[in-house]
Image (cartoon, rainbow, N blue to C red; front, side):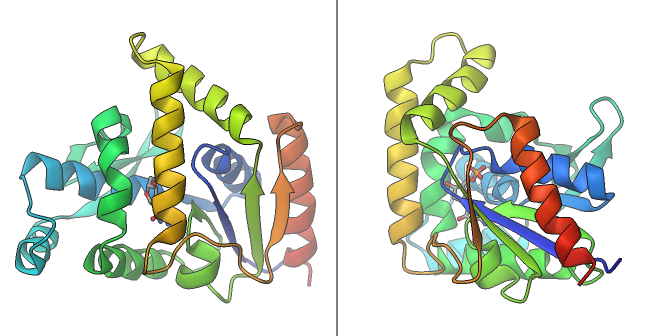
Length: 226
Ligand code: DC
């Protein structure tokens, strides 16, 4: 069985990270949520009031950022650390969600994150989810999955997740945020979200988590034995 790289790309809140994490668990691979990296950078930019129109300010800010993923034995997942601070919960905040697509569209931010992501794939045995993983980060990946789901289903799933942490959140707010992020992520100049030509589509609108895992695992095992 060869160790491979599996990429999962798609719109916001279509279950990519859940599937990527489950796949990595089953295969004993490393899982990386690349969106968490853009969120942590955004959190830093917000805290430090970084001027996004100044190339110099962006460059300096990125020079001050160290990101790493550390295993959390309480939930058996990896948490993202921003300059040694566990930022996993902070980066899911609505303010970060509202700003992350704009920060992630900055060329220098992308170069900073992509270089680190590519390093993580050097030993293979990796599942990474995001927007440009199959197109830009690992165009040579053995298995590329493009995950989609009906927009209304995505809004409902995201609302449920956020409502547990913030009961004041409204469906409308969540819908607006998803639509805005989808638009910016798909229309930005540098590595916009798009399906890689050789990616397989997984529409999970009517699939349970178990069903989508079964499908993806079958694809993965086939590629591993090639
Ligand atoms: O997957 P997520 O919703 O946590 O991602 C947050 C944002 O980061 C998303 O709006 C787009 C951006 N992103 C990106 O541009 N490229 C990636 N590989 C992953 C995320």
